[in-house]
Image (cartoon, rainbow, N blue to C red; front, side, top):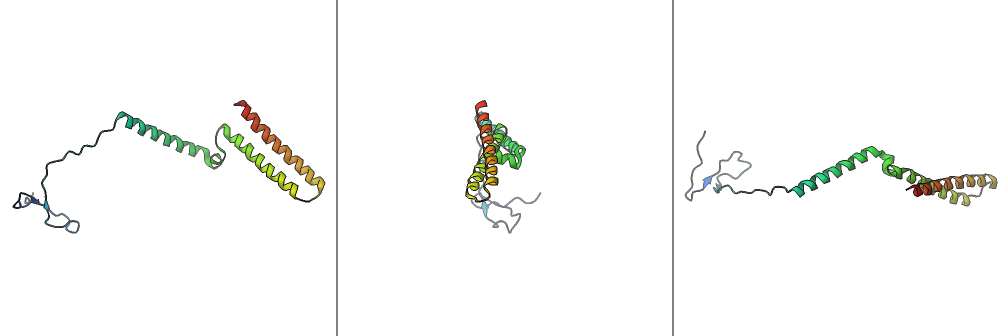
Length: 134
């Protein structure tokens, strides 16, 4: 199979260089007995923690894929409807405040303000009605 490495005076062996550009040639290699570097085996608690974290990561990824873009914005399940109604109420309030700042025909503006107040009150009644069901 080839020549064995030459023994040096102090009992060490020289390394056989496979790739001369990767290693310095002719450096002595200390012959040591196999050191046992056994890593500690995982305990039952380590395994439980690993599987719990992996399960949580899987559920989070699965929920993220189910929600989509609007679901991430509004939420999921029963909270989505309440969040949308809250958004409608806030937008309605902003429109109502802006309508008071506009100077236009009084009759058309009054009709628009009535419509906005109706939308805001409907959204708020939905929010508080949904909260009382919980």
